[in-house]
Image 1 (cartoon, one colour):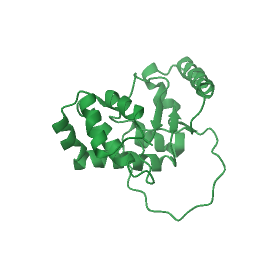
Image 2 (cartoon, one colour):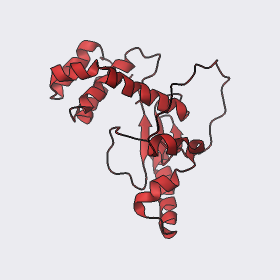
Image 3 (cartoon, helix red, strand yellow):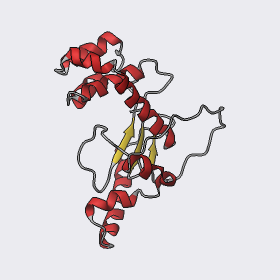
Image 4 (cartoon, helix red, strand yellow):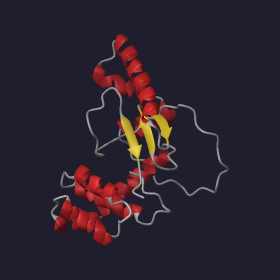
Length: 198
């Protein structure tokens, strides 16, 4: 999750999803939120908690808690440490995929990653170790440190505006997923997404 600073309602929406996650209903809440992403005032977010079947009193307590705010901040620091500058941004086995891409682009990347995984298996690497091996050097090792090993990135120092850079090549990045919501086990190919709600 990466609430963008210029979207003034993105941070409350991100905290709302994390608060729903505390009750095991992040995906149900997230679905409602995306279906209504133009209406995300506090009262809307609370109404979605009710629609998702959450204990609303507990959700409000969690939504406003410093721990949830710190979790969202951590995600922003992680994105910054991995070079994420906008949304949507995906990492497919550490390979940075910026922007909304068509299905065919993802299929090409995933097919390539599956072929790489088969090569690792042929080298005798156990299936449960393929993702870690495939992403070991991604983003200069940052993906492994932060995504796989779970190190906490520190708050980035504010930087002066930089001139636009050329698009990055297909660099692999290791992203520690920690306890982020995810679908599936992702032992061979893992797609990590940074997104915003506006």
